[in-house]
Image (cartoon, rainbow, N blue to C red; front, side, top):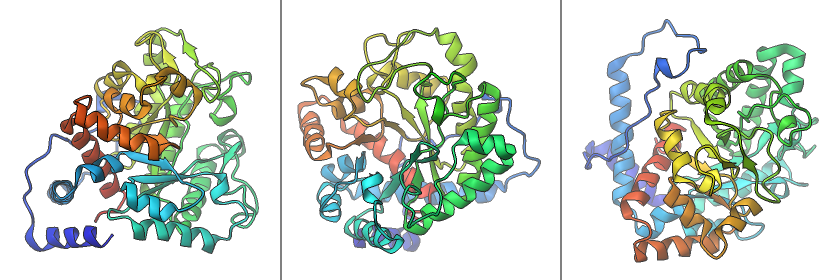
Amino acid sequence: MKRYLILLFAVLLTGCTAAPSQFMPYEPSQEAFTLLPVSSKRPDISQLEADTDSRQQTVNLILSSMTTEEKVGQLFFARCPAQDGAQLASTYHLGGYILFGRDFKEKTAQQIRDDIASYQQASSIPMLIGVDEEGGTVVRVSSNPELRAHRFPSPQQLYAAGGLDKIIEDAGEKDALLQSLGINVNFAPVADLSTNPEDFIYPRTLGLGAEETAAYVSALVSKMEQDGMGSVLKHFPGYGPNEDTHTGSALDLRPLEQFQTEDFLPFQAGIQAAAGGSAAVLVSHNIMAAVDPDAPSSLSPAVHQLLREELEFQGVILTDDLAMDAAANYAGQQSPAVLALQAGNDMVVTTDFTLEIPQVLAALEEGLLTMEQIDRGVLRVLCWKYDLGLLG
């Protein structure tokens, strides 16, 4: 953390003009999605330009000071280990930790704050600290009665009780609780479409059609950005009626046109709602047969190209957990993290970061990955951190 503060102080003192990067911040297109209301408030262009300059100077300066090992570590949003979290965050220069139920179980709020503070203090660059707190069946934090008397309700329950107003009210309370603990990214909302209660993903969705879900995602992401909470749109390209990829592969045979006219709409809505750069997109392990019938979406260059070009998303793309069977079985003897970075992911979500980081470093030595690919991902990660207020 100390070195990062020195670098930030240098930006403030010198107005450093590091070499411009290849990364261009996302500029939402009005044509990309038409369900969103157009604001009548005109932005202050001079202030936007000043903010962009400061952002670029800060991330360029940090990048120019980093070793290869530090760069690679920033590309890992690792599952928080049960022990030695601070030491491992420092040793592997991790970009972030995602916390699960065991990290909250039977702990007080102060114990959790102390844990997270130790991770941040051990890190040379402030970490993303994430959690799955969707509401309903996925509640890592509010499942602990020490932290909240009742679990956060599911999106379907909230919508039935009071529509989008109730969802926004709930989001404000959720963001405040997570931030009070030191968490800066919630792996939500679920942008998947499902109206069939038999679908694996159904309980975690809004349970309604494309337009209603798009409006929900837009409203929720806007509220999270307003609160300074990072969001993660999941699970691109849309989970659909597929089976659980924790325990095996899922082949999605739906035509591309169905994704374009239905499943992509909530993701487009979330991307546009996060004009301030607060959102990432998580890619599932489902096999999208219409685009790449041979690889899970998380490890498919073609699916990532679709997200970059057709949906015009320029922020952080990250994988679902690579320890899940659908990804691990496909990778076989290969490194799933190397395959993920080759495919176009900027961050790798994995439990096995102590095994995967050395393999990414070896892939760089062997030419299987290029430093240009690594730098591009690191710049996006640093920009996400900057936009969440972690670097400025």
